[in-house]
Length: 240
Length: 240
Image (cartoon, rainbow over all chains, first blue to last red; front, side, top):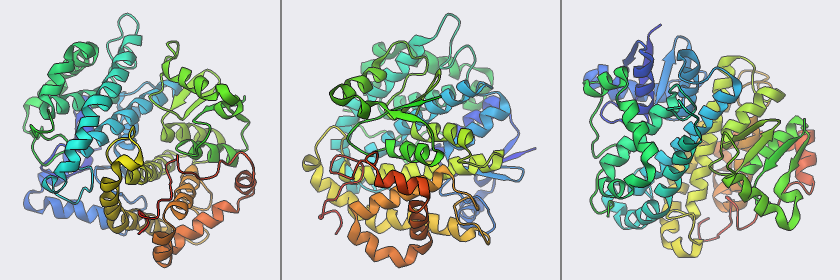
């Protein structure tokens, strides 16, 4: 079965968590809006308003898997994790992976709100004063809280446990890679300053980047470069 | 087995989504911090720093179920839903319920950010100017987008389908009840203004409130009243 992924064609955004999982799984999929050229966005928007979907999406990303139409990033990953061995098979491990993913999703939401603290529908320039203020809290309190948490989780691991939940990578590891990769792009100064405190998290990032399928994906045209329209944006004044 | 719920003892907050599910399930549980008097908060904080938990929580609510320690609200509900028939048993229905819950969680996060757009650690009074601005977008764009979405989902239902996913209530129905109940408290003017556009959503709220176990719960001391410390707060200037 060939999956269909529906997501904005010009940004990594939340879709990137799905693209990474599909890449690591070696799954056959089409990134529909990207593959549809000028019509891509119209096709995506049609998925958001279609009246014949029994499980209508609130927002992208959306995954079509045969007759299933699934949305909400952690929900799609829960599905893919079970299908492709990207999460433990037992209940406790499945719940733990989902728990980690939901915390990563909260972190990603807060990254988004550093440049959009007032409204998603307004330009950054129209909420810059508020962004500067929110970002100060983000750098001072939230980055240490989230990265410190994942550093602690990685420190719990036993010998041979190289990933968040043990010896084998899950979709949560791929997602943590993505957030760290995005932070390195958006907050290079902040990240350089804290690198020594979160060695395990940064080592996990590098370990995921070296996995053969992820490495091939990152080097391919399938990986959209970071840019100023996505969740991770580089504004020097926010990386103070 | 008696569940243990760990959550802040004086607010509904995110813990309320779990309390409602436990009430509807008729589950045996102790609301640990509430039951522990003056020591309640210390006991809760200990759960957040304990070094002997293999699946450490990032934040409350936390559910202890035998040897499992689970956190992240939608993750706890995924677990309880499967155990207590508060979600369909088949994969498609389970994913759809989780998808709805994640959208409700996003909505609740945005409600929180109306009074805390800059930092959770600052008082409302210290971010009031930003709150007024964020709230304008919330009232104008976000409330119609979220409530319109759930109205549309309820409109898809067939004859006899009285809940979001069909004839039987799931934890997502309980959570949507909670958000509407909170909005009625925090934004009475806004909600009065839109009531006619979201009749199905408001009817669902009333239907859930009348379920015998929920009705008994809401009338009991277990239900903490809304107050100015929780996620839903009444500030007349935000309900403009």
